[in-house]
Image (cartoon, rainbow, N blue to C red; front, side):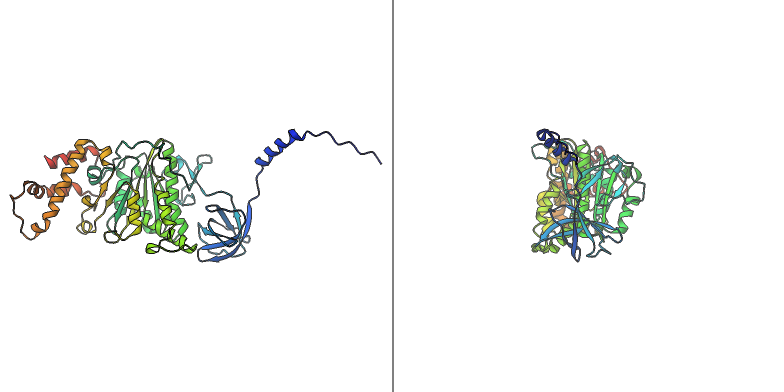
Length: 449
């Protein structure tokens, strides 16, 4: 029997740091678990070490089909997951694969002119971008520090006379478009996309009708507008978390272009459907309902989403969010909360829409909080005079209709009556008409001359 060889001398002090480096570089096996039960649109799973907001995958071992899901809560020892996709065919035999991270979305210039899902999948039937042209951005982004944001100083022309002339929107401003169904919100958005001077436009369609998506993209938008537009779509038949996620993904894509120094226009249609999707998620997770059945988590999610827009350290996101209202909207908690957070509101009038007055913007009920900052003194003076004339005409409109108005009692009111037709013509705009800021200001001066 040969004598055993002596062990070589090992410098453990030098070896341990190298082992630590190798351990950090090693790819960990994903955490796996099992589906315990599927209840409605929620999945309860046994999977250890997951956290709120973590992305997981449900995988059927027989078919290999995978469905993305997000951890939204915990019940006893089970993780509660909300699927970002269709659960059809999934069962308790499915395994749960935890990724250890929240969802990211692919971003890059290759997104321009494309249509994507809330999972970042291209759904327009065109070839995917070349490898290496896209990078990842977090879906749950953080708003810029309030002290690092640029000051808002410049207007953003949208091509709509009633907005550019009387409700000036600033680069980096956040505005709500409030109105009942059928008053032309989608038509106004498509007109803004065509007329906006923004570098990039990101359009988030939340719970939209499937018929209207293709109509908007192929009929209402021209080729030039589509080339600088990214569209994120989740139609009304998709799961609640996918509908809610579409607004977040659209915001993440806008954040990427803002961080590249671009002036971005973010359009989300609509915040109301985002809130309804959040309500479905919250109630299914066991949250208590509050006003109109909305869970408390919604009123935390709204400012988290809306504060992500605005100016950054370079570039800006100008955001317009549509909000569905009932009546005057004073009893709607979503409209009330949104109005309090945003930097202004554009109110669409059902009465104007019924009279075929489009865009149906009720100028006197609308307000831009930043017009004083970005409009010139002459512009503000002209806008103030026109608003005054509109208000004076509104005060005597009933008297005019019944023939009881008598001229000569107030010169300013007589002027309002005389110039009403010119103001109405100024405010009306056909769907394909784009007005430059110079043209808008010139027409305002002509009305007042």
